[in-house]
Length: 283
Image 1: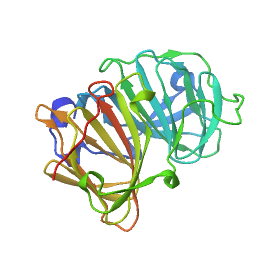
Image 2: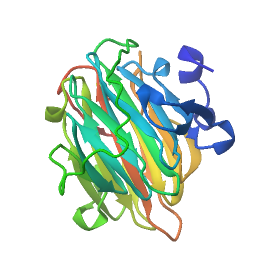
Image 3: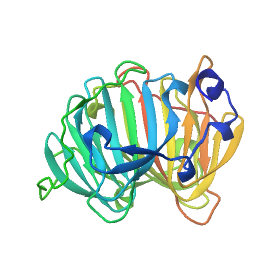
Image 4: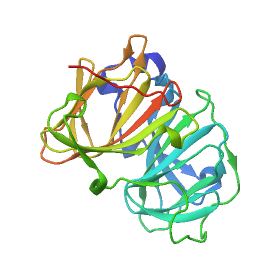
């Protein structure tokens, strides 16, 4: 299902569900070592903004995505377990999960799994021109690259200890924990933000909408309920819930944790217009 038909499908059908049975094999991606297993968790054809894709998968031991450039898109590698060696502009450092690094326009980048266990990862892509992708491979798999003691490139960790309490977020119930990890100033494309949000048991993010931003709420841990317009669907770890724009405006959305464990999200926002962000509570 793609395009307009997918965007108009029931919410349950629009949510991307992580399913290892749907992973396909990728060998030597961008000249990298070894293998990955991937799936298309979300397709950009369903978005009005310039999100191109949301890939989810595994980097197998001693595998990776080779050193390469993009001149018309920005992407981000996020890891959810273990550690990986990230390269940006030819300099390599280890990041411990959960973590990620944005690969900004015209900056070379790569990722490599030096360990003995698969690393669960995600690749998010936002393009300058809708649907147009490019790559220039450098023929460098980065296996055995010299490691810097500290990363000298932009990176983030999804550290719950650094979240700040917010009461009644967007008119919601209770006190949640929130932090903006990356804002629009980091990117050249219309990538708007990457947020980290935790809903403790019994709390909600209130019903709200955006007129110029589309979002993906990716569930890092826990389970709960997504509500978009008049629909509701159960969500759990590994799910990606899209919030889209249409001729009628932005979709009203809210999220609830009625369980006994934290519901943790990575929220990806992409704007129609560079740096133009908005939010409207819907009571």
